[in-house]
Length: 251
Image (cartoon, rainbow, N blue to C red; front, side):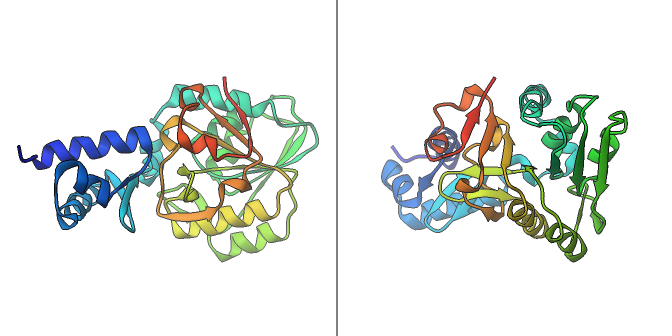
């Protein structure tokens, strides 16, 4: 019996959720299709923002493509839980680089109120969230304010980062994939994130389950760039975690 586009659509999304990748050849074989038809199915799903197309295959799309306010509402309870775990990594008197993003905003809120340290961030929202932390010196990187990501970006931010040296960096990721590494939604975001990694002695990524095994538009580092990954135990069987050499912390 010939398959319908809706049946194939459901199959594609289910396969990506469970396996993290589906090739056009595998889809064509599964439903006795031509590869042209399989590619058309992928194109239509990609146009709807439901998958990420790569050469000869499809990958799960990251929710990080949404604007900041939309992302902030996703998995808020999980973000809070992971932020508390990540906050315990920080030591007194460290220079802490905190990349922008909704999960890192939760991290900033959960730093100990009596922590004595220096925080460097490109997020005005994160800087404001530390207002009650009296012993924190906060350095806000100045540049062009991007309304979608709620970060300062651009050449001026890059110049400032390259003049710094941080003990630890909490990097924001929109996607973390075994093959495509650490990805984000914006070109300028990727440049800033890559620069932050270069000047930091230790790199921590806090990733909610919806980011594990997904891919954003721009890659900024391989998985090996992460020293500590803080994530939820629900993703312990995700194939991406098998490729992670970082120390993995879960609740």
